[in-house]
Image (cartoon, rainbow, N blue to C red; front, side):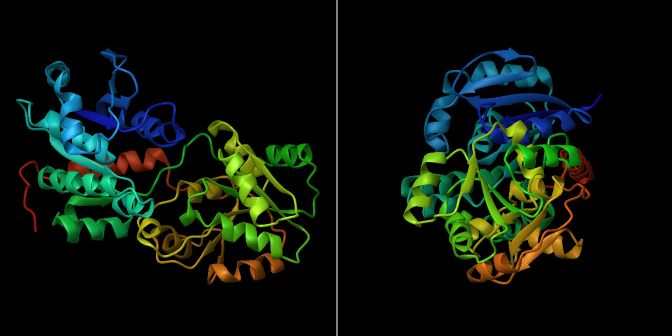
Length: 380
C-alpha cells in the first residue's frame, strides 16, 4: 500500500495559485501517495471527497492564534488523520506548517513533518511594513524549524538562508522551483494568430507581455517607463493583472501617452494571451524577496513559447536559463531596458521545451522522501 500523505494548503480554490500550484501538485502526488488534503479556507466542513476544509482565523501565521484556531476541532481532525494512516505531513507556507505542527503533537503516530516554503516571507512582510506580521512569522518559523524533518523550498537562496538561520542541515532541504500547469501553458500557432487578429495587432508588431501584480519588487514601473521612452514604434506592451484600477492610475502618473493594452482574465485563459506575444518580461532587483523567489511567470512564459526578457541577477531561474540555453534576452541592468526596447527585433515565436512541470516536481518530492532514512534525524 502507498504511503499516506496529509497536505495542508494555506490557500483555497478562490486563489489562482491553488489551481496553478496546489491542485496540479496534488494530482501528481496521488500517483505515488494516498493523499488527504486539508484546505485552510473561509469555511468549515468535515471530510468531503478526501478534503478537509478548515476555517482559518486572520493572523493564523501567529503561533498562538493558530493554536487557538485549532483548539475546538483538534480531536476530530486528529481522528481523521489517524484513521487515514498518515506517513507524511506537508504544510504549505507558515500557516500550513503551523497547523501541521499542532496536529503532529497530538498524533499517536510519528509521521515525517515537511514544511513547503514558497518565499522569503520575512523580507516580504518587512517590505510591506507589516511589523507585527514580521515578528509573528519570525517566531513561528523558529518553532517550525525546531520540529521539522525536511523542507521543500523554491530556490537555492532560500535553502542557504534556512540552513544558516535555522540550522537545518542542507541534505534535509530540497530545492524545487515553482511549478507550471502541465495542461494550461503551451504554444499553438492558431491560437497565436487568432488573438493577434482579435486585438488588431499587425505582423510587424513586437508584443511584450507582463503578467502579475504591481508590487514594487515586480518593477512594473520600470517596464512602463522604458516603454514610454522607447523610440521603437513596433514595440507594444500588454499587461495582464487583476489590479486594473491601480494600473491605470500608474499609467496616468507616468504620463504615458502610448496605448498600454491591459486585461484581467481567468487563470485558465492566461496562456492564450501569452501566446499572442513575442516576449515575456521579468525584471527584478537583487533584494532578498527576489533572490528567494521562483517566479511562476518565468515558466509560464517559456512554456507558452515566448522569449523572456530578464535582467542579469543571481537567481536560480537566471542561472538555469543560461545553463540550459532557454530562450531569453538578457539586459545587463534595468536602467538599460529602454535601450533593449529600442533594438528589439521580431522573433519566431515557437513551441519550446517545457520546464518546471507538476509531474516532474511531484516525482522529485517522492524521490527525495524515499531516499531519506526513517531514523535520519541529525542536524548541524
